[in-house]
Image (cartoon, rainbow, N blue to C red; front, side):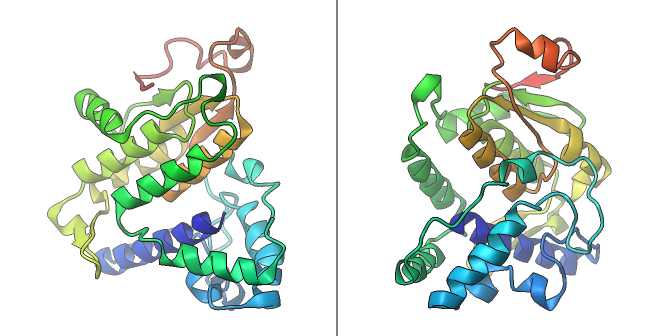
Length: 269
């Protein structure tokens, strides 16, 4: 959750730079108020001890449970995913205040601006989950995912599904592919650390479809549902359809009759 909090703030920074570059407004994740801005990593990470523990437990973690419902201006978002549902039980489990301060410092030192390093850190953390590898849950290597996506060449008008999404690696990397392919020269910028960012400015006509209808992922592990929802949100898709369902179960016909047959344009698994 601490890593997620920092990455949400990083995503907001990128969105702000994009808005300044293009002159177009954007949906804020964090309310544009003094209280709302204190939910951002860069504004609370220097708190220490009791103040930090109280702020995370009473302010930041409850904010996670509200993600997706409204944007930072207080307006309802369209095409909501289930992230707020999966984040309802988010809780600060670090009780020792000095340990918490050290944990925040360590997360702050992680080189998360480098996408490859960020992916490696994610994979390491996920390998520590007790559910990883159980019931057939295994992560597909990134280079395999990227090769498959390049071969399929998904289009922004399509509907894409991963029937056993796990951490949503296929779906998230598809979003990265779309941003890269559909960025104009003016929509590509390099930050102060030398990292290249693709704004996906050519995707604007399809934005509502991408945010609410394009991405579907099924899994029957609630931990994976939470992680995959966070992963998609960190890739700018707040309304991904991440659902609790065993795709091999006959119950999928009952729970998702429309999606069970001839609904998806692309299946990546």
